Image (cartoon, rainbow, N blue to C red; front, side):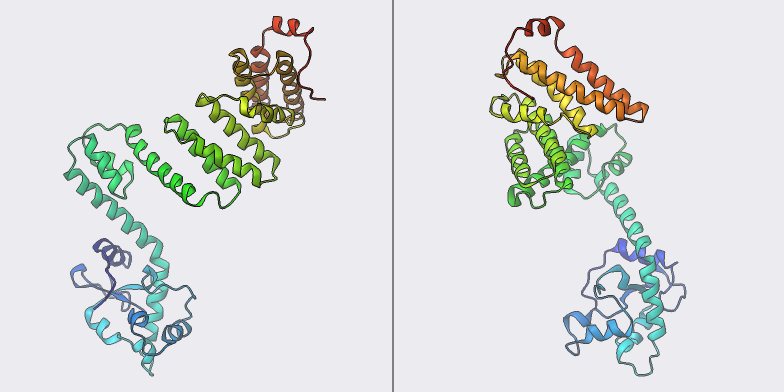
Length: 359
């Protein structure tokens, strides 16, 4: 008797993918009569006849080192009669009477594996949807079902007759994904200081302040760690943008990072990265708003000088850009910069001392 529990949906998918025939003999077989056989006997793992028995099977049938006895690539629909006759004879029968059947079954199982997985997942989702539908009375039931079942939202929406807000259900999956990533970083910290981790941190910190979860301080701390560990200048600027923007969105004062912020603006002088340029223009407009609210200590003269620096950087990029859409984007950012400070403020500033030099 097989020790592996093979779900009914997987049994059906294997049988159907094999054309409702035995994988060994190629003869038609009903679903009620099939046995799902391990082509290489599973006994080899838990009760080998000799210490290197599995290696001998792999060598004889030219199997990969990572061949999985419990994988779909080792499962085959069979009649009970053939299954009993085959037994261990694929290795221990000197006549090799079953060798051609086993080779044929292994080749076919490997070829059909993607199709079997697709059929299995499709049938299981449909079954889960039917099961969930039978127990759903309202939107709260749907939410609970999604939290406890491995099933996608669209399948449930199609299965349930009442109107459902896709956005409302999506929130559950997004929060579940966020919590999983949050737990990963709380336990392990940042393991790989690469662009993929940056994108994950970026998504999480934006989700946190967008949903008022209160985890922003944790993500900002991780960003600081990230910035300390990398040398890539563009990535550092993108990380700093996320940090500063998060502080603004959560109403934290910029005073503790104001020197960093001024250095960030200074570094944009010869910036060639389109995204960084756009982010710097966004930050400047916020920075000037914070200045007007007396939430930063910089003088107006410094603010105006920063604007000129960014405006020149945008001009340089506009001249070197080749596509109309990119030029339009950059011109819009420059327009926003020009509109951010009133002309009378610039005139009034002519007699003021510059508090921060970008020379």
